[in-house]
Image 1: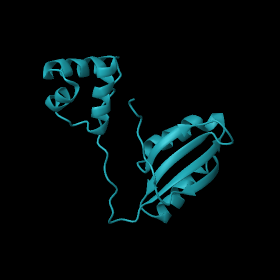
Image 2: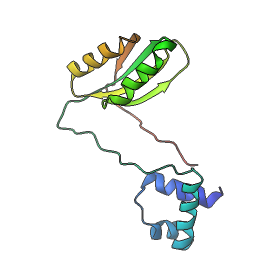
Image 3: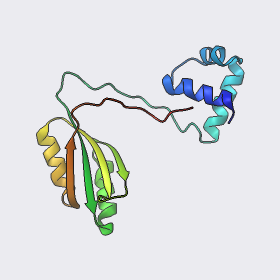
Image 4: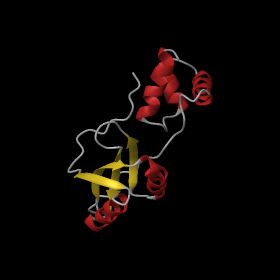
Length: 143
């Protein structure tokens, strides 16, 4: 991967729908050359996909929280199955420290959050922090 590939990745990370023609102009290449580079990065797994990021619905009072859990290794597969099947779970990280997992959730209301915490507590001790506001939400940078 060279400097031009990194520039292309940077542009796509800002706007994955940016037209190839516009990318080509910004990196001083032809459109077919940029298309080829993008295709190559997809084949090599550098670009693993494109996604849609929805803006939060401001008409609802949603509750975002971080739930830390300490679970026994024997309960890991059942817990991970629950996490994967729960649409209010946004992210789940296996972590070091006093807890096994940190889970980011976005629930419709406090009752939904309480219900989810109760489900998680079947697998171990939890600690929950409600997110008051997000000051920075940075994705992986392409430098």
